Length: 428
Image (cartoon, rainbow, N blue to C red):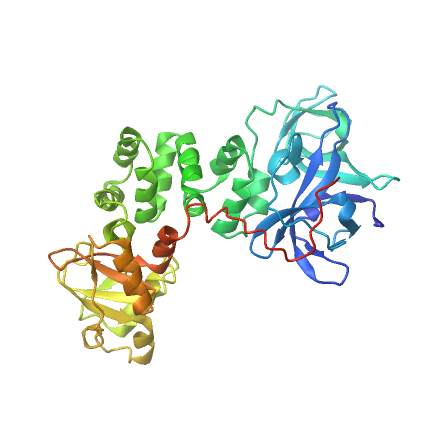
């Protein structure tokens, strides 16, 4: 590979586009894979990069397939194995496993934290990790005479990494992935060990962690939630949509689920408890209990103000459910639905009661998944009202709720192997 310069800092590569020789974009660089060389003072060998290709799948591209790499772009041969990346043996991810790790400086001056590493290309074309960019965490260093909080560029041999079993920070990882959508962040978590997932989770805000956990497979959700202390786990559950929280708690041992429910705010726990009472596979178990609900006297202007909320999913924002008070589920008598298209066609002062779609029949909270899916498909709906036997609105099933239950259990990790480039073996 012909590259200039021959030293590259990994943090500056993150998010760069990766192209084939014809200029077609393969994806974005998300991490670098390195392999130790048996001794801690021996510089690790960079064996490849992790590229996020279309479809949000992460694949491995060996360094031997890279023809050019600098701080602006990366070009490879186009021969890429599109099997989903999985770490092997002693491989380490730089962003996922080296950044934020604590090291001990060999001059005896204390500890530091790795914020970046530099790779140098050797005459034979190999890339070795030769430098660490660290932030000091102790007394004055004899290496540079810098104080706590200062940064330092040192040789790889000038520091010793701590025991891998010790907790590792995740500040850098979270910062470099803050632009990812929750589903994409969840994909990144799935490539990590259970230990590393917990370390990253501890760095995330409760709301962000809740959104990301909702995108993980159920087994991974249970493992991660169980690793959090009970107070934190309850806080995260409060930030989740009630239906997602109920699904997660249903997979926990009953005693643990009850412990967490007692730690949650009573109002938040009430909705979740109600969902847990429904049998699996019923409309009641699928629904969210907090759709947009307004009385018939409310105006089009008020309804549009409600659906503009950033907290609403597109599916929930597609319809207003009209009910008699009380307006919290279970409501008073359900009157019907006003679709957002109708709101956009109507005058702001017009009352919602005059716009109700009375032809759309709700489903019962005891109806099966088959009934719900048939109804939504027949009427091309994004959301469907769910009522109790007394005719009270108890929630709404959205199209994303339905898909979560119709798709195979492993849909989040399913890899059909469909190639978008010529396949090549994993080497290097």
